[in-house]
Length: 313
Image (cartoon, rainbow, N blue to C red; front, side, top):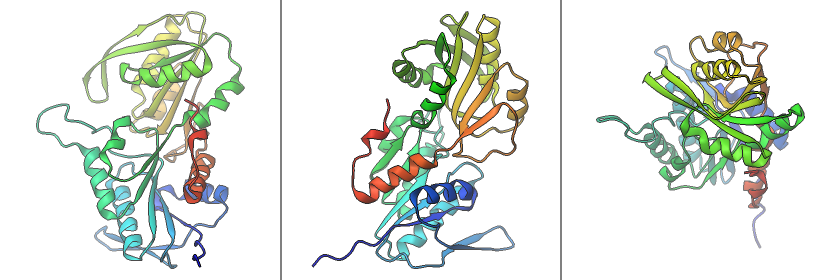
């Protein structure tokens, strides 16, 4: 006689508590209880306050800096492994350190590969994430990776705007594949921004490939960090005759003076997901939650059913 399958348990890392609560509500279970002991030197130790033996465990936490966020995920994975959890899924709406996906200069680390190794060594038997900075990062893992796309949650927002003369834009050459995927679904034109950097996060020159005159433009990107690229692209497009410029960015890192750049730019609005909590709210930033998407995929993983219907593109 087969044993009854135990229900899964969801736990949250502290940096993603608000999002985890939304996911748990959508999933239909309460978040599991975790106690974190903190030491005076900054060290900390999370502990599960309930049994996970024989269970499927989902640990929810984005790993944006500081490194404590990644360390908390690793410690919780290790705790679940040592507590005899049956399956351990690291649910990382934002996969941090993903920009270091290759050696782009001599004597540098491949940080994304290092993080992948750490997650697996800590005990993750599955990875769930959204809009990786580079798709090939999936190949850094020897475990299954559910790579979700934010287009699933953003598309209804775009459709509700009911924009005429819609054009999709990429803020750089690297994002052209993403822009073409959006444009194919929306049956719109595409323009590309070509930029040259002086150094990381500093743009030397930007040029526009394509025509935006008389168009309502939507820039799409996987993340927004300092906001310099999007602000400059929006200003350039408005100067070239665009009717409006919006931006859709999955992960709102928004470091430094990014909030001021966005507020003072010619962007009509910036639409982001809640993979990373906003440091503050401003009128131009709109948040679309990714909780229903993750809850649905987690349910299907638990039930061993296909998640193909969540891929619009």
